[in-house]
Length: 205
Image (cartoon, rainbow, N blue to C red):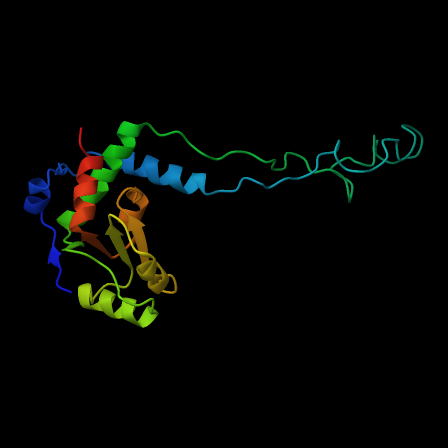
C-alpha cells in the first residue's frame, strides 16, 4: 500500500489549521496528557484507620505507675496490627479540562507530528483476512521503519480489528476517538483520508 507524507500544505488544504508557533499550546498538551493519565488511575487504594481496625478500645495498661510510656488503645498506629496514619483512601483522580484546551492540545500535537514528517496518509487501511501475518505485512509495507505505529481511520471492520489485536507495536483508533496522548505515543501515524476529514471536522472552530 502506497503512503504519502502528510505535509502542512496538504493539512491546510483539508482545512486543518496548524500551529507554527513553538511556544503556543505546550501547556495545553501537558494539561491534557496529565488529565488522560490521571483518569486511568483506579483510585481504589484503601487503608484502615485506627477507627476501622477490629481491635479493642481499652487501654493496654493503666496510665501511671508502670514505668512504660502512656498508651491509649490497641488500635493506635504505633502498634503492630493497629490502624494506618494518613494512609490512602479511595478517591477520584480525574481532572476537568476545558474543551477549548483539549482542542488546542490536539491541534498542537498534530502540528508537531506533521512538521516532523511522522504522519502518513493512505486511501484506506484494511486486511482481507483476520490474520496477524496479513496485518503485519500491510503495516510494514505502509510504514517500514516504524517500531510503534498508530493507525487512524474513520472506522475499521471486524476483520481488521481481529488481525491487529495481537500486534503490541500497533494500535487502531477511530478518528472520533483519537486523542492528544495517542498522537505523541507512536513513532508513526497512519491516517486514512476519511479520518483526515473527520479530524478536520473535530478541529473546526
